[in-house]
Picture (cartoon, rainbow, N blue to C red):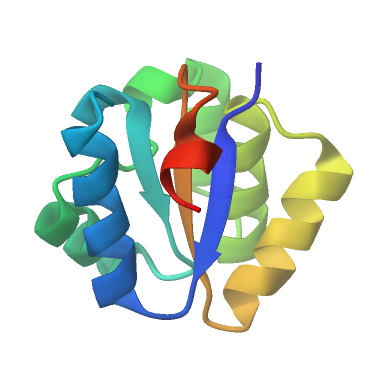
Length: 116
């Protein structure tokens, strides 16, 4: 099952929503942040107490391949590893090009209800 996704332009609102998820029993291990820029992804994830898509979520072939890919290709690969189709990954990558940050939540179908 692919993760629930919500897009943000406001990093503070994203951090507030991560806290809301945790208060409702969602584990940090199931919450991921992804932005177009690696530094921004790391900074937001660290500030919000969430994860980034790393080695545990990717297979070795894709992880090594990402060393030689352009940023957009790397982001689409990460999203496909999380369960998204090529079309979905392309759409989300375009949104990240526009400055949006993705909050992804695995294993918690109630995430959408919590964040409404």
